[in-house]
Length: 252
Image 1 (cartoon, rainbow, N blue to C red):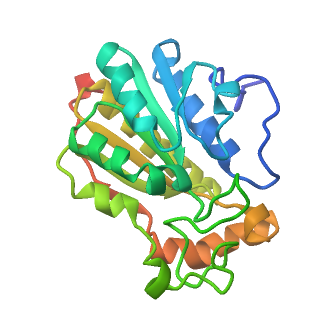
Image 2 (cartoon, rainbow, N blue to C red):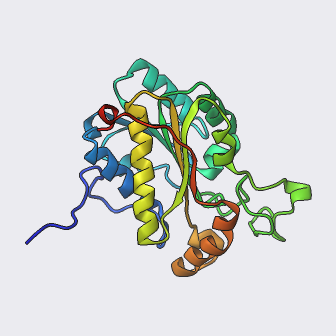
Image 3 (cartoon, rainbow, N blue to C red):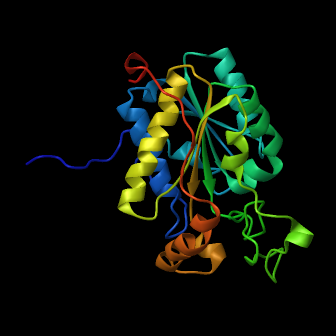
């Protein structure tokens, strides 16, 4: 019988701590599969954040480094510059990357650091109880904006991918989601391209993944996915914002 699916060697065989319906698990699997398929699992070094994925070092089957809140790009910069032959990536949420880590991600991109960032955007602070994040939508309720985000008080929802796409050192920027099988396949394709850009030594690459937080959104997993489609995708449209051609010999 032909094997149509098997567990990736890029993940440890352990149970994760994520809430039911959280899409971190899917995103973890895609990153792990890509590293395995590219044959770089043994050379990969992940940098994990403060946030819901703070324990990702227990799940990825590669070397990992824990970073202070928002500082994953700075840590990844040091690792990549010291070991340029390694495949270095950060895995960050929106409360980490888009808030306290905004300066770090902007300047890593501006320097064209040859690292890859997986940016998980669920429009809220998940680990700490559902506070408003820079990506929380206007009108969306959170524990720190209980009447909904008011742009006159809280500012507007920050579109990270669009901002980074304007930076010369960022050579690959794409936004995806994992709410359907088709979108999961598209997300994996983008993540793979982001790592191929790094392997080719072209510059900074980032994939923003729209995700859900059923627990802090107060929704069932299925309702959370529908809310993402109805509210997040219209404001954070899917697609490639910046691309670079790779020669065949540069693509593993």
